[in-house]
Length: 367
Image 1 (cartoon, rainbow, N blue to C red):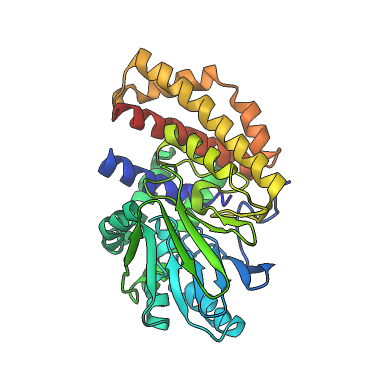
Image 2: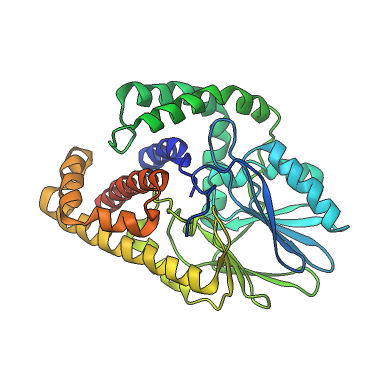
């Protein structure tokens, strides 16, 4: 997981709540672009963080005999252009399909860059993601210049959106994020936002020419419309942010449903798992990690439900619920399972754990 996402994710989580009511060395901060060949004609690209410290989602390129499909367009137009230049070296075929696994900006802001490069491009997403992209994404350009003010408010208060005290390292990261806003805003001036043009409800099958791609909706999780992409012949699954490794993103979404969605994901016949952020996982590591995620979600949602029923729903009762959960659950044990003693990952886990409590509490209030 990219620890630096905590800075941006706390803002995304606030927006969602208000509107909807062995560790790799670079997992905490991705500083270089890397390309991994997963199979013949299948490549995954990990992007370095943006100057404002926002992480960029993994992009996977799937090449068929006739055309190409890309999974997630990342965050910066410059990164998307770099990917496109490499795709054109891999295949003398058009990118005909671009799948957005969910609406979050680090997976969709490159849509317009792909559409400009490949006329006739079809942007595919679940029906809920299509609605959310059309609703949320255009406003991002208007809200973005105000990010510096909100980040500065958090830095001055000394606590993030989930009430976690900022460490000295956190403070440095917030300062770096504020400094990086200007160059990112300059890039965003060139973006023409492109929402999905083809939506699906449960499953969509695409033949790229002797290569079948299945796009599936397994249920709510990170968002209301998370899609996974599956190659049945190669047994490769791309999860979007349903899976982020080695520390998950639980900064919103639907925690109570998330575990069931992950169980359905684990039941797929896959040999390779490509998460939304982080390293590529083999079958054993992927299944074990998904099991760990479901166990954590089950444990936290059970306790949050019990304490919310005891103490009450609504924002005023959240601090008391959060305090009770921290006492009832062995947080250190869970932290050790995900962070493996790595300080930056431990900090990341503490932030995502606090956010998970917030999201679960908000979800219960809507039932």
